[in-house]
Structure formats: structure tokens, C-alpha cells
Length: 246
Ligand SMILES: Nc1ncnc2c1ncn2[C@@H]1O[C@H](COP(=O)(O)OP(=O)(O)O)[C@@H](O)[C@H]1O
Ligand SMILES: [Mg+2]
Image (tube, rainbow, N blue to C red):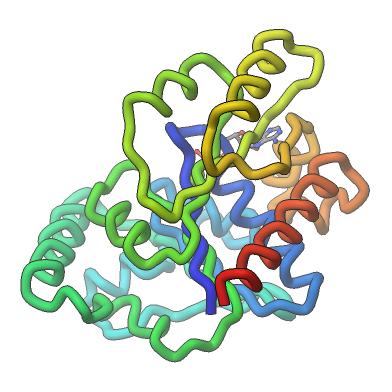
């Protein structure tokens, strides 16, 4: 089992969309994938045609003190676990619980993630939280590969300098428009200097945005689109890194 944590260097970089699209492509290659939502926005589920009014998710089971949340099957090879919907009081429960766990049982998985120890999947993809630092620390520590998404703009470039990243981090450009001169320049600088930059570029493509409108993964919605081809290259890169690592 390989755990892949995907986060944006800031919100809106495309982390959730890439999680869902990548899961689909890996499943097409015969891999079994679980996609887990760690983001309070609770949007990942919508890529898997989940009822938007539903409050179902791991955070709701945490609140009701049930042991394991129910994982939902989407299609052969893809299961997903929504974040769920809950009031803001749950955030301090998560932070306090994870803080206690880190202090007293650092080698044990938190109860709500016990299913990870069953090793049922080839890939677990985590849509990381940019809001709850305790969840972000947890996904960083669980991950075999940390994927940080960058939109090729000046803001991302500055944030790369200002932040530090876990050792097993790789960087991925998303939303590239080939006609933009500033994007060309920034991508070029990163290609020359950014250690860990993945040699795959995800283009800006309306098919990605539209796939959420139709509540499907990108590969189902427009398998022939440019961005679906980019995601396929990313899936091949992931499988290759995984082989080298194991
Ligand atoms: N490559 C892309 N081309 C076009 N739109 C994209 C692309 N990647 C993401 N988007 C759109 O950008 C918005 C933010 O994406 P999202 O996956 O929610 O980002 P995050 O999870 O990092 O906040 C969404 O409307 C999504 O459809
Ligand atoms: Mg998101």
C-alpha cells in the first residue's frame, strides 16, 4: 500500500480535483484505490457523484464516537471516504485528539484511520487539509509521497521560498496555460531550480472544472481531453516512483 498525500501550496491549486482524477486513472490501470477527504470543505465526494446534501463522512462518525467510518464504493477499483459535515466544534475535537495521540501513542494510528492497517488497497490518496494543521501534520507523517500542487504564478513562487516541506515532497504544476508569458517564465525557473519538480505538467483545461459540474471524475467525463492525458502521465509517474521505492 502506498499513501499519497496531495495538497496545494495554497487553496484553489486543484488538489481535490487531482485526487479524484488520479484515482480514476490508477483504477483504470487495475489498481485498487481509496480516496480519503481530510479537507473541511468536504468537496471530494462530489467528484464521485455523492448526494451534496448528505452529511455522511468520517468526521460525523467521530462525533458520534462510532469506531470506523463507512467507506463508500464508487466503481470497481475506487472507494472513497468523505470528510462529512459537522459544526465547527468538531475541529477542536480533532486537534485535541490528534495532539493527545501524538504525545501518548505516537506509533498508533488514530481510531478513525484504523482501516489503514488492514492494507486493503494498493493506493490511499489523501486530499489534505489546508485548514487544520493537526490533520495536515498527520497526512504528512502517514504519506509515502507528498505531492504539493503549484499554480505557475508569482504567489506560488514566493510561498515556495517561505514554507518548508517534508523530505518526501514532490512538486507538480497544475493549471498551466501555454500562452501565458509569466507562466512560461515561472515554469522555466522551476524546471531549472526546483528540486523534486515532477516532469509532468497539468494544463489548464475546462474539462477539469466541468467534471465537478457533472459530479464525475475527469477520466469518465472527458477521457480524450488534454488534462486527462496529463493525469495519465502523472499516474504513470506515481506507479514508477512506487516501484522504485518498494
Ligand atoms: N487543470 C485545471 N484546469 C482548469 N480548472 C482547474 C484545473 N485544476 C483545478 N481546476 C478548477 O479549480 C478550482 C479549484 O480546484 P480544487 O480542486 O477545488 O482546488 P483545491 O482542492 O486545491 O482547493 C475548481 O473549480 C477546479 O475545477
Ligand atoms: Mg480541496
